[in-house]
Length: 389
Picture 1: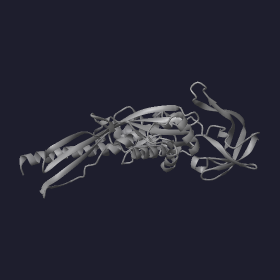
Picture 2: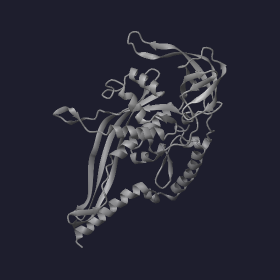
Picture 3: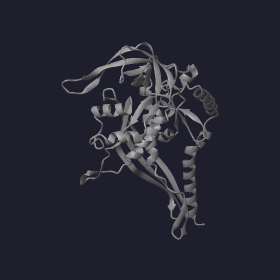
Picture 4: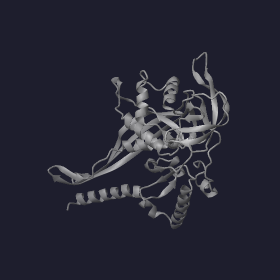
């Protein structure tokens, strides 16, 4: 065998070993014994804490190993974000609507400022929906239902949601908050690195980088409450072995890493949105009244349970800024308490527990008390104090 061929094989082997070791965690074998023992002990504690539902979020790799989010939260280890997981949760879930993703990436050609880089906005919207659903803290409205409402809005497929649009869409969907994304940078071919002499033996790593801003709007007044811009850079190795087979290389198929980068961004945003909303009460609406039965637009799908107490807020009107004509929210007044008697999949039936004079369809309801959460053990809280429930 020629010397160049042997060198090529060695280079490819080293590249393969590096790429696979990074994913499989083989590099940990080089860690000192004390570090490994500490890591093993932390693993056992983390597994115990997750079973106790003490954690909000953690990472889990292909080998089943879990790690605190703190290890990656402020680093550039974007690949870890593909394994983001959340502990179980059985309390009321806030309803979110995920709107269309907007493309504001740089123009594709300098000479044509009206042409923008092609970005799969529908796919990004779907990934964001899945990421929010996987937090287990939200009731995420299906994309088809959101699209049906957006079709009724004039030119809302071309511009970002205004406060008025957020209020209208959110109320029709029965959502408390709306989430949408804006693509700032889209670089599916961020760069390539090649190893080996090429020809018979060779390999390359394709890299992609994206930047997306995620915004959270309050349906009550249409105002944006929270924004976060997330960036991720991901790479994927591909290798070829053997040539000359009619000019066809026989090797691994090259994968496009841009979808991984989008998933990483969506998972980062989902975690931050969950942290931002974790102390917010679930809110709903009285949708019908039949005698002594009051129908509320939340059921088991939203985590509602029998005997749950709901505070009733009578809607007295909408407060509007006379100068800007912006709707600032609803003027509400507490009038009593309901108690949930029957829970269906998408709605519940409640009875009056106390007060509720003048109760009417359209009045708002919210949890009378904060949901009871599992007691968080001190050792669990110490692992990730900022990311526990």
